[in-house]
Image (cartoon, rainbow, N blue to C red; front, side, top):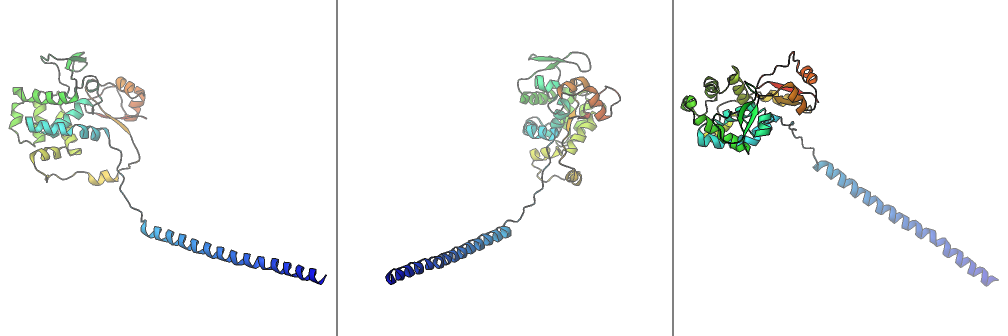
Length: 279
C-alpha cells in the first residue's frame, strides 16, 4: 500500500507541473503578440508620415467647343502653312458654321463650313438655308472640307484683299469675310472674334508663325478657375438649317423644353446662337 501511495504522489506531482509549463508558454505567446502589435503600429505610424495627401486641381469636363478645337486644330495649322489663312479663323468658322460638328451639314455631308455647290461636280446635299433646299457640297471626310475651305478662299478674287493682311490679324479677317460676302449675318465678325478670344485660338497662329511667346494675355483665367466644375450642361451652337424641332429630335427633348430653358419667346434662331439643352 505504501508503494502504491508513493506512485500516486509522483503521478500527481507530474500533473501539477503541466500548468506551470502552460503558463510559461502563454507568457511567451503573449510576449510575441506584443512584439507583433508594436511592429504593426510602427508600420502604421511610418505610413502616416510618408503618405501625405497630394492636392491636385480637378479639371472640369471639356465642353463641345474645346473638344472640337482639339480634334481639328492640327488641320487648321497645316492649312495656315499651306494657304496663309489664319488657323484661328479657320477653327472659329468651323465651330460656328458646323455647330461644333453637330449640325446637319456636318453630320450628313462632312461639310463644316457651309460651302454651297457653286459649280461643284462632286457629291451634293440639299439643305434649307437662305432659301429652301439649297445645294451644298458633300465630302467623304472632314479633312476634305477643311482643304476645300482653304481652296475656296484662295481661289476667289473677292477674298484676295484678305491675304494682304498680317497673317495673325484675325480681326481683319473676320471683318473682311463678312464684307466679301461669306456670310449675311451682320454679327458674323463679332461671333468669330468672340470665339477666337474666348478659346485663345490666336495661339495656333502664333505656333505656326514661330511666335512662342504670344503678347496677348490669357483672358478670364480667374473666372474659369472659379467656375463650379461639378455641373455639366449640354450646349448647342446653332448652325445653318437648325430649327427648334430638329434640335428637339436630335437631343430627344421637346421644343417647349428648349424654349423654357433658354427663355425664348419665339421659334426663331440665329447662326452662332448658343442654346442650353435640357437634360
